[in-house]
Image (tube, helix red, strand yellow):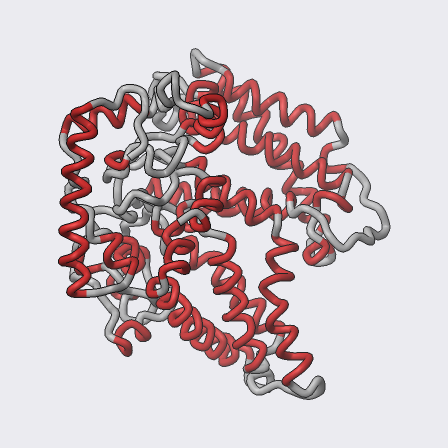
Length: 477
């Protein structure tokens, strides 16, 4: 266990006792299952873990002083690592991975810049300020995309956008950002949210706003998906944030809960690199199509009506993903990649974005290869991808409405939340992403009648809490 400022003998003693308990528990768990995910997740008790109270208090203090002792080599490197990654190492303070995680360094930094101690209820101006900042930032990025489409837009998507509709939406977002910012300025003592949103919206208008002309053609093979990020963030936030506020499972959970910046970084990077991810995910299916399948008139599913094709593609894709998912829980290296996704200790619409790129690429490549082999039409594949885009977000959402009537036929938030649970009975269960019948067929379903999971995450402590560390750490083990 790496020492940090403020951690002394009590924490070391508690950590030593905890590690001994973990080793004993791991040996007992190994008799029941050798799955890395099983052994890793069973270490955490539902009430928040094994650490002594003194260790927990020191862990909270260490978040603000997470620096090595003065004589430790590499002081400046670790200090920079703390600011960028939120921690010098994922095992710096093992007892920090509790059911109530502390904010990361970036969480706290943004809180200091934009936060205050005033009420945040509806009508207080806080929601308006957040909306103004979000709309101003997305509008500013959208205007830059109109100016530099060859650099900031994804070639795979450029020709598919309804540009007049996007221009109208951009104009509405910029106007709304200014109005919401003015309301925030009028209602809040600290006006940084509203003023920042107004500044970004006015800057976007000064750069041409929605009237920026587009070139007749853009001939580049690669570009960042800034427009894809902006569109998805705007649509998903408008749909799921109100949904989670109106019918939450955990009412006390905030929109900007601890580690939201980590999940936001995953969301940002995966959308910016949509062109590269799409090419890599489709490469195996292209290879199969070009080498193993006759190039002409191959449409095993393509001749079926579109609704039937969609259901067939959904079933084939979920069956493929089910077994890929089980492999990621069974094989040690794959579990280290997949543990990034399971490390979220709060479930909401943004938590599903936390996924190691190699995990996401392997799953998507396997699914698309099977779909291509089945000869599905492009329309059926597009319909499936549209469904997945919303359903995958929905099943992670903090949405507590009663959907028990859907549980037998479609994965719901409560169903999938048990896949992320730390309790023993739920580990290595509910692998299906869309169709629960797969878990019933293969004996991996766990769904108590009424209750929800007690806690989420992995509990062995090696999963880092911030983006860059989560990408690198699986290769360090």
